[in-house]
Image (cartoon, rainbow, N blue to C red; front, side, top):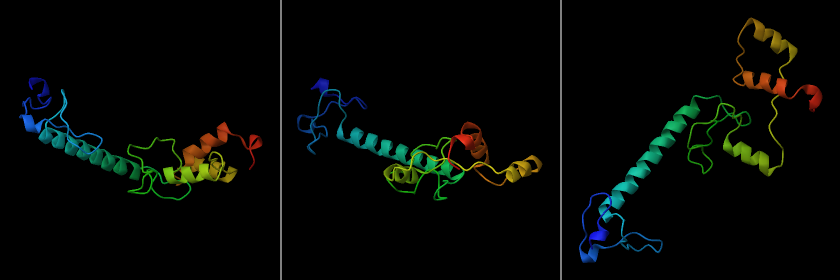
Length: 150
């Protein structure tokens, strides 16, 4: 029985409480496991941490530029299965839903439009309002118009 001591609180269970939650929905206690109360506390703590991480990701992603395609949050639709659970990379252009749609329709990778000469000249005078400006300039350098269909 001492080998069945809870790894968190160290309590040695009574004979009838030697159970641990298993795949079949049955509580079966194994050596190195947790007692029921420690198991519940751990599950609740993990759930709370996941919710806090998701809220932090939502807040961080709301501050980033919107999705290029749908103009929604770059982190995805709130509450959807595809919503990002961590902060989106700075080079991300579309939300997970739009990316999945692009793959499903076999559209290939997203190519941002090159800045026009007028936009480039205006950028020399003032900062553009376009939240994707830096990415558009980078795409124009990486993928010149001659190498792709415009």
